[in-house]
Length: 217
Image (cartoon, rainbow, N blue to C red; front, side):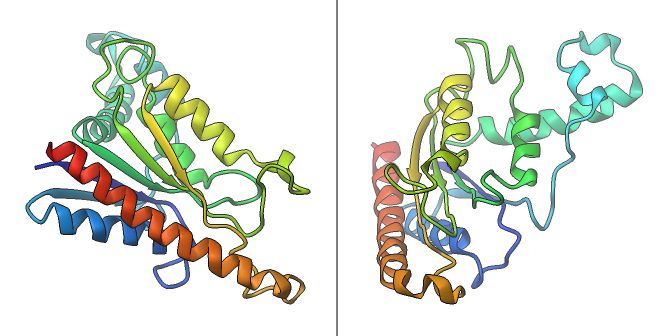
């Protein structure tokens, strides 16, 4: 049976997080298709991974036989995260927009799993072609034609990472205007927020079922 790696990075708990609501919808649909499958859930807000250090970085370019004790310990954590990614048949990531970018905890995870010669920069990467679905929630609207189109760095960055660097198969689901119910200045946008939320929830369930069926074939 297929393995799903489910990563959440919202600082808000379930019930208060737009991205978690949609990742939960995806995961529920996935588990309905794969009751005997495996889901690895990594909550980067509750259990953040170490930010990359000089030891962790340099160890990735050195022969393991030459690693210092500090390099060996730091690199072991990177390898653990990479192993987890490599065993996944599909990846689901909640990536809310904070100050126009992804949460630092998600960036730390990416810095650990991007390793030249293993996950990047090689045709033999085990994660090449693996489908990754990113729930890119945001409080406002940053799509083409919106006033803040130029501030959209989440999808731009993650496309460069997952497609260009890692060679994965990427799809975004974008719940937007999530601040409308809380911000009086955005009250006129509540219907658009509600439509976006329902569309994202539906798209997540549909995508999960499609991937499950594809991987089972």
